[in-house]
Image 1 (tube, helix red, strand yellow):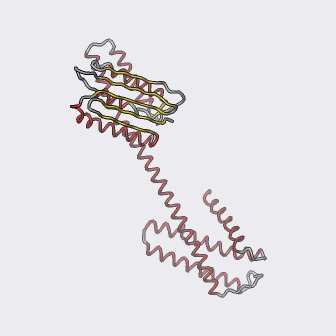
Image 2: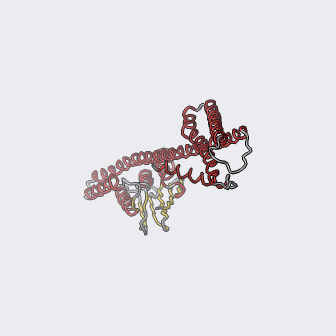
Image 3: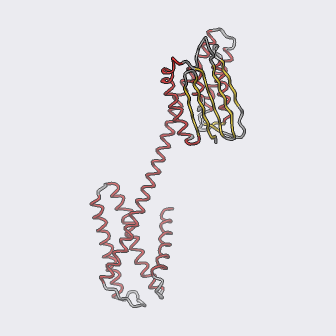
Length: 338
């Protein structure tokens, strides 16, 4: 119902404009309405012939020769029909003309031909423009669906890896008969509850993500006896949100690839602070030069996944810099949060 009403309103407006622009010199209102009706009805007939039938047929078959032949036939048929109607009405005084009319039948044919051609061109370009807009909307919709599917896949890749590392931490405590194993198990349950249930949304309050990050960091620190783990987190102000499970892969990699030297320092340092709605995240860990090639290969898949998520979700609203030296691996990330 909406589209027919829009079309009707358009042609009513077009009729009024055409009447005022092309037949302003006619003093008799009946003559103005008569000539305007013939012109506008011819334009509309040519327009819908192309818009409804010929252009969809061409877009489906892609047969240019048939399309041009059909356009020519439509112009000739409409101009001939309207020339006959107009000349018949004039010759038999069906509508009284209150001004001197000098056109011959050839003049009427030429005039109807060019007016029909105007409708043909309008139908062609309007249909082409609408089709391009529809294709653009479809491509945008497909891109969003692809992004959503890719994000879901990336989350699924990250989650099992995190669970594996966390269970390793718990196993290490149980091996040592630690009395803290029960508390660790409770913490692990909280982490999994967050991961499996709480974060199944596009956006998460940044406070919850920080709490999850703290629990994970403390849990992993328990099994790193030969490593100094430092955590500095500033609480945000305002109702900021972040994509869930976005920062944890960097911390996970830090614990996985931290150095284990007996003759030097081994540390993991994580800092997180805010500047308005801009999050600054830094995670660094010592590493061993001889393991760089193997570690970089292992990190590659995880880093590619995180980079894809950042690009899909934040685009130009984030900056990521990764520095890999002989004995230090550092991640600097800045995100403008919602």
